[in-house]
Image 1 (cartoon, one colour):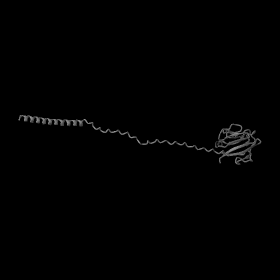
Image 2 (cartoon, one colour):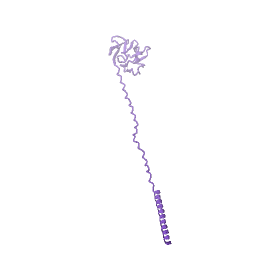
Image 3 (tube, rainbow, N blue to C red):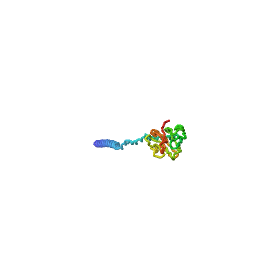
Image 4 (cartoon, rainbow, N blue to C red):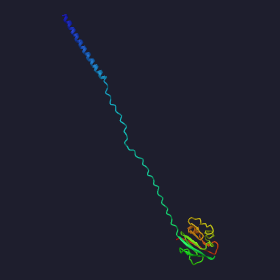
Length: 204
């Protein structure tokens, strides 16, 4: 009887130990699982790859190249036509008078008068042949006897570019200008005062 009781107690003790051992094993497994779960390498969060800075596709507006300013071609100044030339021939009658031998314009003076009035046109050039020049220099003068053009003195208009005085002895030439015309009064032989006549000027 006593033997059966001890056998039953041992069986109960063995069962209890087995149960306790099972519980302990269960707790250990759970702990191991939890530890494994806790220590698992966390899934790394995707690190966003930085987006490359966008390359600007805008085409820069080109700087406008200024159009070079054209230098205007200077307009050529037309060369004025040379003045009309009028041939004129004068001679002396002794020491008393001038006569007009030939007049290319037929407007300066008549050819049959002594010391005729000579009329010159502004803008015309007169080429005068003085057939008696060696003894009878010709001159155009102002009312106060100032020489304007002269074959034996310095006339005030002899340096004028517009008048273009020329004295070759037997031939003299000049262009009648407005300024010269405004001062013109008479013509004369610079040696013989009786060889004198009125001089005038007109415009066309």
